[in-house]
Length: 116
Length: 248
Ligand SMILES: Nc1nc2c(ncn2[C@@H]2O[C@H](COP(=O)(O)OP(=O)(O)O)[C@@H](O)[C@H]2O)c(=O)[nH]1
Ligand SMILES: [Mg+2]
Ligand SMILES: [Zn+2]
Image 1: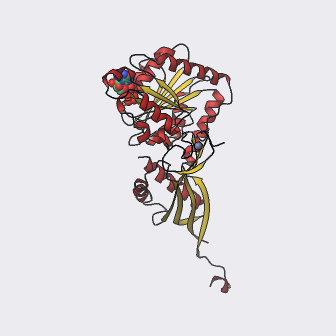
Image 2: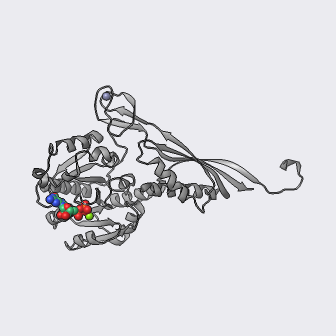
Image 3: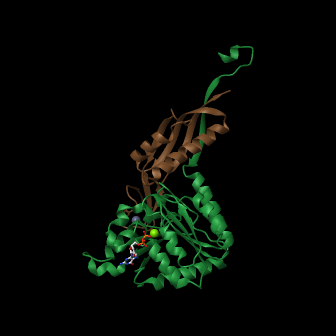
C-alpha cells in the first residue's frame, strides 16, 4: 500500500510549505496524479482521509487533476494517448514508446489561512 | 474594512501558494544523496524486487557463492518481520544489514541512507538491496541504486509483466528464475513471459536462470562482474529512470 506513503508525503509537503508562511490552516491542496503513475485513486482517497487527521489539512479540500497518459513512439515519432504502459504505437506497432505524460505525482498548490 | 481603521491590527487572510513539487520529493532527494555516495565511492548498487518467493534470496546466495573472493559484496535486506533472509546471507560470511519495514510494503531511500551508515560498504564494492516481496509498491521508490532488477519466476504465470507493468517499466534488468521447473509446467514455456516483459519495457536486459540448479548463473555473474568492475573504475555513473527510449 504505497498509497499510504504517498498520502503522508502530500501532508508533509503541504504542511512544511504552510509553516514557512506562518499559516495555521490549509484550506485546499491541489494535486496532479497521472493515470499511469501506478496509484489507485480510490486507495489514495481513503489513505488521504486518514493521513490528514490531526494535521493542518484536516479540513482541506483535495482538488485532484487526473492526467491522461501520452506516449511518443521511438521508431516513427507518432504522439498518442495511451492507457497502459505496454500499449504499442497505434501507427507502426512498435513498443519502443516513451512516456510524455501520465506519470505525474505532484502537489501543485495549496491555499493557506494565516493570521497577519 | 481594515484600511479604514487608523490603528494597526491583525486579521486572517487567505493566500494561494504555488508548490509544483513531486509528491515523492523527499524520497527522491534522499535517493540522490545515496546515489552521490555510491558514485563517490564507486559502489555498484542493485535493487532486487519481486513477489514473495520468486527467488531473490536464493539468487543472492548463489551469486555470492560464485563471486566470493572476486568482488567485495554487501547486502541490505528489507523484510517486514523476520530476519531469516539476513541470516541466510550472513551464513555466507557477507556483511548484511537488516531493515525491518514493519507494516511498510517497500523500502524507501531514507532506510537505505540509514543502513549505509551501519554497513559502510567500502570503495569499489557491490551492494545488493533485497526489497520487500511485493510487485507493486517498491516500483515507485527510488533508492539511489544504479540498477533496478525485477525477478519473476516461471511458475508465476506469463502475464505478470502486464498485470504489474510499473515494476517492469522501472526496471533495467529482468531475471526469469526457476527455469528448471519449465518441464513441469503446461503452456508455451518462457517465450510469452519474455515477450510480455519486453512489451512493457523494450530496454530490459533479460537473464534466464535457475538460482538453485545453477543453469544460466554464469551469464548473470559475468555481467555483474563486468559492470561492477567498470563502475569501480569510472567515476561518473548515471542512471535516470526517465532515460527511456523515444523521449530524447
Ligand atoms: N526449483 C527452484 N526453486 C527455487 C529457485 N530459486 C528459488 N527457489 C525456491 O523458491 C523458494 C523461495 O525462494 P527465496 O529465495 O526465499 O525467494 P524470495 O522470497 O524472493 O527471497 C525457496 O523454496 C527456494 O528454494 C529455482 O531456481 N528453482
Ligand atoms: Mg527473500
Ligand atoms: Zn510508431
